[in-house]
Image (tube, rainbow, N blue to C red; front, side, top):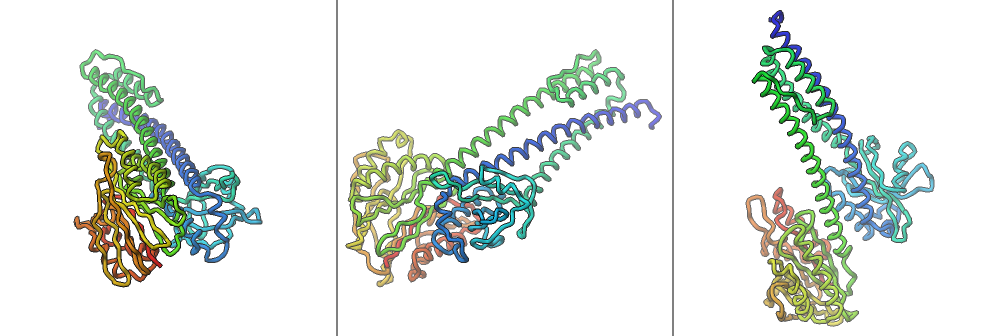
Length: 520
């Protein structure tokens, strides 16, 4: 068989094609691998720098470097921020904060997000004498793609400085990604290239068997054209052949280079667009996070716990503690904009400014919603079906009264602790932004010691289990009743745990926002 000219020509053609393809794929693989690593490094630096901007240096200084500091309110707030940063990317293993040690060869831990698998003690020293990259993190964002190993494992790490509002650097924020995760990403990338090269080699073998019966000159010209393309000149075209078979091959080859050029251009455009969208969502998430209160206010006679969790990167829920004209009163607001994702977030962010300005001028919940509705309804977005449901309450600490008005939102759950029963609430109105000139009625709740008020959005009671069942108001009431003796923080945790247990592995149905108020 191998004495046949056709067979030998087929083998020579196949081997030549294989070498060209190997060179072509090797060239593009190493180029793509470098671009991938550079993009991953840049992504880590950007993520770490953006995350560091969310943590003021004053918050870091407020945590004492002594055992048990993670249980303090400042320590807990810092841990929650780190956990929120870690949740941005599922590949992030841990996020932590370190500050300088008197010995320049060491840094000291403040706290970290992953406390179950990589617990650190407040003030625990960390040797950096063989890791100068961590020192670079005090100057600017820095990602070290060379894996480092410590007592918790092997990581690829990135660092960024933490600064006070005055610009003073007080520490660094560190983000760790497990080396195993990085290796898996690179392995998948390499596997795709191997599969592509295998497919192309198989096609080249079939082509070689067919081309073995053709004249050697067209074959040499074809191989030469492939070598030119393998060298990076995808503009190259094969000349026309007199033989019909080779003329067809010339056309296919030229269309292939055109397709390759078009695909490379489209791929580059897609990558740029994806990066732009991803960055915009990250910025939107940072902006939304910044509008929520960092922690509930200290109100005499009340325990307060509140938090909002978006179903997507960003959401349309909103809660706040608003300024009111009287220093003896505190405003509570919880709202939900129509639509999920970025449109709801933008609409709610614009409306938030209206709430804050008007609430500082009005001591009446109903009048605050009346004026807010007129402003919001005049917005062009309202004509596109956008609206907001709002529940606004003002607490008078001297009278222990909560006056409120409702614009299409869920009624507050008022649990009377001494009577061990829920009180009904009837007043409501249409959501804000639909039509101007509305009048919103008020209702007054006379609170007593041990009473509970729970405010929520539809992400709580409409949370769905894997079989489609909804959580519902009755299940929420049952959790409140069974845990009515707990403080606001612990009751909040019970409700949150109940929702997570109910939905199981099902994705979040909607943004989840909850405020728990307990009368001391």
